[in-house]
Image (cartoon, rainbow, N blue to C red; front, side):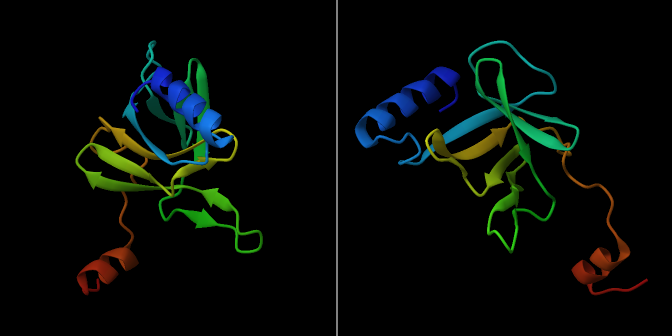
Length: 137
């Protein structure tokens, strides 16, 4: 699904058949944008260390993400932050899937992401360099 209209139709049909739109898993493709763009497209935007998805007209869903994500609270077993995984130049995926019981359950692919992605850490720490290369300073 690439449009808000398609999401609505998906949720309606799955909800009618199974009672819960999150009962079946779909896939959405969100285009990365630097600023809000009018229209029906599913969009992704990065601001203030938060990834936001536009899944409805003028409705943005803020998502916590982490470099080492996904992060789980060990006591409550609840998701604290999603992870973002690069699957190719300009293409990333949210991990795990976005599951909102009673609303929707989808895998999220984000495309048209600039290089480097705004959420990519650009600093390599000495211990990370040593671990990756086997060399020490």
